[in-house]
Length: 409
Image (cartoon, rainbow, N blue to C red; front, side, top):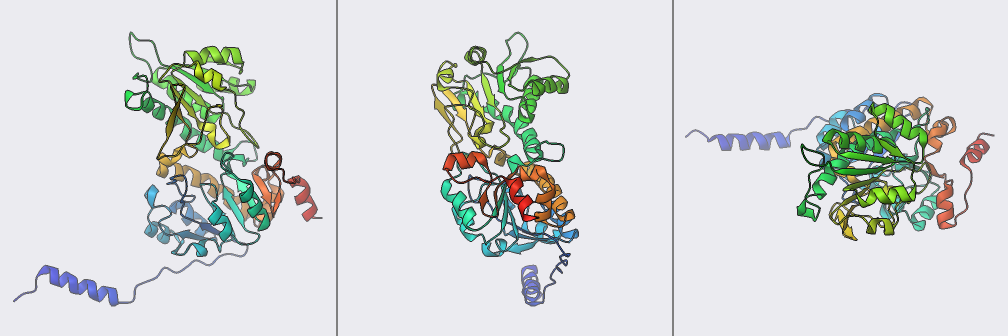
């Protein structure tokens, strides 16, 4: 009697499982190459990953070693097999990841992760001002770690490359979130974000004329909304007008003018970025109390403390709350809603920085040469170098330029 197809497949499968499987040959790490570890994120409902398979392939082909924790990219639809084929080593034990010289994260380090770090290690991650604790800072200092915050990294032109690329994404997606929360499903006004014939347009107030502010404004104009942009930096307001190629309402942040605009606003977006510390809080609780019920506030600056006095950190599980009848959306990692796009954009920028560090002969020489990168360092070999954190936690602060100069004398 002929065997069934199921039995035949079963025999083939059993035979294959017993045969020696081919294994990818690891590419040799070049002299002075980087040894990078990418753990799977476990906090803030984070779904992004620091490096995509394409970036891993580029790094490995340039002689660097990348170890990535299993399923680190699964939520962004990047599979382990893709990383393995790109040349990464898949780690099933987190200790293998933290054996690397430098750790790359897209969420702030957790207490457990800091405990796993080894002496003199380097970590790239967001700082996230509202959630950072004195205990975590002191733990980094005790292990002589060098910690770099993405949001303060500058390029040679003086711009913030990570903030810019993520700002474009945040700005483009913010209005989509606002439109969602304006619906009655979330207790909003029940209005359409934008403008249609014979009806007055939605009123959108934007605080900050940087990258996020620009892309929020572009999206709002594209939908037909009436936009008001506030910023105390005259150059940014002028640049915004030029980039948009049209005249819109722009003004400096004057409390009485801002108050009047908030009273009539349907959506208010906070997008003011600080270069080294907390973002300025420009909207008081009293101002919020005068806003219309069901209007929406989105605080994109919440990862730096927020622009609104009423802001509180939210999560993707509970992304909003109401105060004085106003819907507040204050999720620090809002881009985790679009993990594949956000991971790809982020990875492209950070990979460029890593390759620059390699070309300079390693991180120490890179930090010595790159003044923009120094701006992102808040702990250098166990010494606190961020003045804002020093004032906040009453920890001794040392100027980073002096430290690096002294190390090369």
